[in-house]
Image 1 (cartoon, protein in one colour):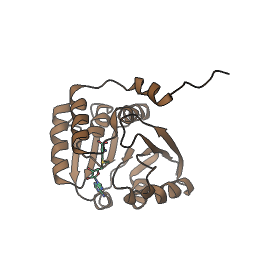
Image 2 (tube, rainbow, N blue to C red):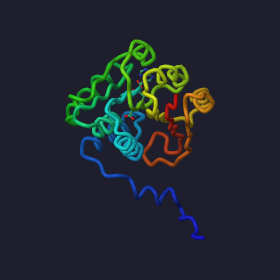
Image 3 (cartoon, protein in one colour):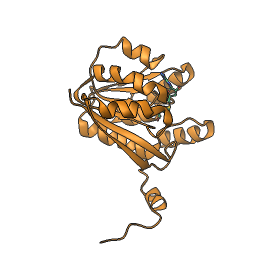
Image 4 (tube, protein in one colour):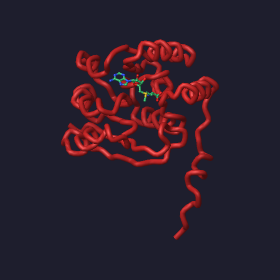
Length: 204
Ligand SMILES: C[S@@+](CC[C@H](N)C(=O)[O-])C[C@H]1O[C@@H](n2cnc3c(N)ncnc32)[C@H](O)[C@@H]1O
Protein backbone atom coordinates (compact mmCIF):
# COMPACT_ATOMS: atom_id res chain seq x y z
CA UNK A 1 0.00 0.00 0.00
CA UNK A 2 1.20 3.52 -0.77
CA UNK A 3 2.47 5.41 2.28
CA UNK A 4 0.77 8.61 3.38
CA UNK A 5 2.23 11.87 2.11
CA UNK A 6 4.76 13.15 4.67
CA UNK A 7 4.03 16.52 6.32
CA UNK A 8 0.49 16.60 4.84
CA UNK A 9 -0.38 20.06 6.16
CA UNK A 10 2.55 21.62 4.35
CA UNK A 11 1.76 19.53 1.27
CA UNK A 12 -1.90 20.58 1.13
CA UNK A 13 -0.94 24.24 1.52
CA UNK A 14 0.33 23.82 -2.05
CA UNK A 15 -3.26 23.39 -3.29
CA UNK A 16 -4.85 26.65 -2.20
CA UNK A 17 -7.13 27.67 -5.08
CA UNK A 18 -6.28 30.86 -7.00
CA UNK A 19 -8.50 33.91 -6.47
CA UNK A 20 -8.93 37.41 -7.84
CA UNK A 21 -7.52 40.68 -6.49
CA UNK A 22 -10.71 41.51 -4.56
CA UNK A 23 -10.75 38.22 -2.62
CA UNK A 24 -7.01 38.56 -1.93
CA UNK A 25 -7.59 42.09 -0.61
CA UNK A 26 -10.43 40.83 1.62
CA UNK A 27 -8.12 38.13 2.99
CA UNK A 28 -5.46 40.75 3.82
CA UNK A 29 -8.09 42.93 5.47
CA UNK A 30 -9.40 39.94 7.44
CA UNK A 31 -5.89 39.18 8.72
CA UNK A 32 -5.30 42.84 9.62
CA UNK A 33 -8.64 43.28 11.39
CA UNK A 34 -9.09 39.72 12.74
CA UNK A 35 -12.29 39.15 10.73
CA UNK A 36 -12.92 35.36 10.89
CA UNK A 37 -13.57 34.58 7.20
CA UNK A 38 -13.72 31.07 5.73
CA UNK A 39 -10.59 31.53 3.59
CA UNK A 40 -9.88 30.30 0.05
CA UNK A 41 -10.23 26.53 0.57
CA UNK A 42 -13.63 26.63 2.26
CA UNK A 43 -14.64 29.48 -0.07
CA UNK A 44 -13.94 27.27 -3.08
CA UNK A 45 -15.66 24.36 -1.32
CA UNK A 46 -18.79 26.51 -0.92
CA UNK A 47 -18.63 27.46 -4.61
CA UNK A 48 -18.29 23.80 -5.65
CA UNK A 49 -21.14 22.63 -3.41
CA UNK A 50 -23.46 25.43 -4.55
CA UNK A 51 -22.69 24.75 -8.23
CA UNK A 52 -23.00 20.98 -7.85
CA UNK A 53 -26.33 21.38 -6.03
CA UNK A 54 -27.56 23.72 -8.80
CA UNK A 55 -28.54 26.17 -6.05
CA UNK A 56 -30.71 29.07 -7.24
CA UNK A 57 -31.65 30.48 -3.85
CA UNK A 58 -29.06 30.61 -1.10
CA UNK A 59 -29.34 31.89 2.47
CA UNK A 60 -26.17 32.81 4.37
CA UNK A 61 -26.12 33.49 8.11
CA UNK A 62 -23.12 35.67 8.98
CA UNK A 63 -21.97 37.95 6.14
CA UNK A 64 -18.98 39.75 7.70
CA UNK A 65 -17.19 41.57 4.83
CA UNK A 66 -18.93 39.49 2.17
CA UNK A 67 -16.00 37.13 1.43
CA UNK A 68 -17.90 33.82 1.57
CA UNK A 69 -20.94 35.55 0.06
CA UNK A 70 -18.92 36.39 -3.05
CA UNK A 71 -18.05 32.72 -3.55
CA UNK A 72 -21.70 31.72 -3.07
CA UNK A 73 -23.10 34.48 -5.31
CA UNK A 74 -20.64 33.61 -8.08
CA UNK A 75 -21.93 30.02 -8.03
CA UNK A 76 -25.50 31.15 -8.79
CA UNK A 77 -27.11 31.16 -12.24
CA UNK A 78 -27.89 34.69 -13.54
CA UNK A 79 -31.43 34.65 -12.12
CA UNK A 80 -30.28 33.21 -8.76
CA UNK A 81 -30.33 35.01 -5.43
CA UNK A 82 -28.23 35.10 -2.26
CA UNK A 83 -29.68 36.60 0.92
CA UNK A 84 -27.06 37.12 3.62
CA UNK A 85 -27.89 38.06 7.22
CA UNK A 86 -25.54 40.20 9.35
CA UNK A 87 -25.98 41.74 12.79
CA UNK A 88 -23.26 44.40 12.46
CA UNK A 89 -24.25 47.54 10.57
CA UNK A 90 -20.62 48.26 9.73
CA UNK A 91 -20.08 44.77 8.29
CA UNK A 92 -23.35 44.91 6.36
CA UNK A 93 -22.23 48.19 4.71
CA UNK A 94 -18.82 46.78 3.87
CA UNK A 95 -20.34 43.62 2.43
CA UNK A 96 -22.72 45.60 0.19
CA UNK A 97 -19.76 47.60 -1.10
CA UNK A 98 -17.75 44.41 -1.69
CA UNK A 99 -20.68 42.74 -3.50
CA UNK A 100 -20.71 45.79 -5.79
CA UNK A 101 -16.96 45.47 -6.42
CA UNK A 102 -17.42 41.74 -7.13
CA UNK A 103 -20.18 42.53 -9.64
CA UNK A 104 -22.74 40.39 -7.76
CA UNK A 105 -24.81 43.25 -6.31
CA UNK A 106 -27.91 42.29 -8.33
CA UNK A 107 -27.85 38.75 -6.93
CA UNK A 108 -26.57 39.29 -3.41
CA UNK A 109 -28.64 41.10 -0.79
CA UNK A 110 -27.49 41.83 2.77
CA UNK A 111 -30.18 42.03 5.46
CA UNK A 112 -29.14 43.63 8.71
CA UNK A 113 -30.20 42.22 12.08
CA UNK A 114 -30.14 39.24 14.41
CA UNK A 115 -30.27 36.21 12.11
CA UNK A 116 -32.75 34.29 14.29
CA UNK A 117 -35.21 37.21 14.22
CA UNK A 118 -34.80 37.77 10.49
CA UNK A 119 -35.28 34.07 9.76
CA UNK A 120 -38.42 33.93 11.90
CA UNK A 121 -40.17 36.33 9.52
CA UNK A 122 -38.93 34.70 6.29
CA UNK A 123 -41.08 32.40 4.18
CA UNK A 124 -38.98 31.85 1.02
CA UNK A 125 -37.59 28.40 0.30
CA UNK A 126 -33.86 27.93 -0.19
CA UNK A 127 -31.79 25.29 -1.95
CA UNK A 128 -28.75 25.86 0.25
CA UNK A 129 -28.16 27.48 3.64
CA UNK A 130 -24.70 28.38 4.93
CA UNK A 131 -24.49 28.83 8.70
CA UNK A 132 -21.63 31.01 10.01
CA UNK A 133 -22.90 33.16 12.93
CA UNK A 134 -22.12 32.94 16.66
CA UNK A 135 -21.89 29.25 17.45
CA UNK A 136 -24.40 29.36 20.35
CA UNK A 137 -27.06 30.39 17.81
CA UNK A 138 -26.53 27.33 15.58
CA UNK A 139 -28.90 25.04 17.54
CA UNK A 140 -31.66 27.69 17.85
CA UNK A 141 -31.27 28.37 14.09
CA UNK A 142 -31.81 24.71 13.20
CA UNK A 143 -35.66 24.70 13.24
CA UNK A 144 -35.63 27.81 11.02
CA UNK A 145 -33.16 26.12 8.66
CA UNK A 146 -35.44 23.09 8.42
CA UNK A 147 -38.47 25.28 7.69
CA UNK A 148 -36.69 27.44 5.09
CA UNK A 149 -34.72 24.72 3.30
CA UNK A 150 -36.42 22.62 0.62
CA UNK A 151 -36.47 18.84 1.08
CA UNK A 152 -33.23 17.73 -0.61
CA UNK A 153 -31.61 21.09 0.23
CA UNK A 154 -28.11 21.38 1.63
CA UNK A 155 -27.18 22.87 5.01
CA UNK A 156 -23.50 23.68 5.48
CA UNK A 157 -22.29 24.78 8.91
CA UNK A 158 -18.82 26.19 9.46
CA UNK A 159 -16.80 26.05 12.71
CA UNK A 160 -18.55 23.03 14.20
CA UNK A 161 -15.31 22.25 16.03
CA UNK A 162 -16.15 25.05 18.48
CA UNK A 163 -17.65 24.05 21.84
CA UNK A 164 -20.55 26.42 21.22
CA UNK A 165 -21.63 24.24 18.27
CA UNK A 166 -21.94 21.07 20.37
CA UNK A 167 -25.73 21.31 20.81
CA UNK A 168 -26.13 21.85 17.04
CA UNK A 169 -23.84 18.92 16.23
CA UNK A 170 -25.82 16.58 18.46
CA UNK A 171 -29.25 17.78 17.33
CA UNK A 172 -28.69 17.65 13.59
CA UNK A 173 -27.05 14.25 13.94
CA UNK A 174 -30.03 12.81 15.81
CA UNK A 175 -33.06 14.42 14.11
CA UNK A 176 -34.78 12.35 11.44
CA UNK A 177 -35.25 15.40 9.21
CA UNK A 178 -31.54 15.40 8.42
CA UNK A 179 -28.75 13.18 7.18
CA UNK A 180 -25.56 14.81 8.38
CA UNK A 181 -21.81 14.34 8.52
CA UNK A 182 -19.35 16.30 10.61
CA UNK A 183 -15.88 16.48 9.08
CA UNK A 184 -12.83 17.39 11.14
CA UNK A 185 -10.49 18.92 8.60
CA UNK A 186 -7.26 20.79 7.99
CA UNK A 187 -8.36 23.95 6.18
CA UNK A 188 -5.49 26.23 5.07
CA UNK A 189 -6.17 29.93 5.78
CA UNK A 190 -9.49 29.13 7.45
CA UNK A 191 -10.13 30.63 10.87
CA UNK A 192 -9.00 28.37 12.58
CA UNK A 193 -7.09 26.04 10.25
CA UNK A 194 -8.10 22.86 12.13
CA UNK A 195 -11.86 22.89 12.49
CA UNK A 196 -15.05 20.98 11.80
CA UNK A 197 -17.47 21.43 8.91
CA UNK A 198 -20.96 19.98 8.97
CA UNK A 199 -22.80 18.98 5.79
CA UNK A 200 -26.42 17.93 5.97
CA UNK A 201 -29.28 17.29 3.58
CA UNK A 202 -32.88 17.81 4.63
CA UNK A 203 -34.52 14.46 3.95
CA UNK A 204 -38.01 15.21 5.30
C1 LIG B 1 -17.52 34.11 11.13
S1 LIG B 1 -18.07 35.69 10.64
C2 LIG B 1 -18.72 35.38 9.03
C3 LIG B 1 -17.66 35.22 8.00
C4 LIG B 1 -18.20 35.14 6.59
N1 LIG B 1 -19.20 34.10 6.47
C5 LIG B 1 -17.05 34.85 5.65
O1 LIG B 1 -16.50 33.75 5.72
O2 LIG B 1 -16.69 35.73 4.86
C6 LIG B 1 -19.54 35.85 11.56
C7 LIG B 1 -20.35 37.08 11.24
O3 LIG B 1 -21.66 36.86 11.73
C8 LIG B 1 -22.12 37.98 12.43
N2 LIG B 1 -23.02 37.45 13.45
C9 LIG B 1 -22.69 36.78 14.58
N3 LIG B 1 -23.79 36.37 15.24
C10 LIG B 1 -24.84 36.79 14.49
C11 LIG B 1 -26.24 36.65 14.63
N4 LIG B 1 -26.77 36.00 15.66
N5 LIG B 1 -27.03 37.18 13.67
C12 LIG B 1 -26.51 37.81 12.60
N6 LIG B 1 -25.17 37.97 12.42
C13 LIG B 1 -24.35 37.46 13.35
C14 LIG B 1 -20.88 38.66 12.97
O4 LIG B 1 -21.12 40.05 13.14
C15 LIG B 1 -19.84 38.34 11.91
O5 LIG B 1 -19.74 39.37 10.96
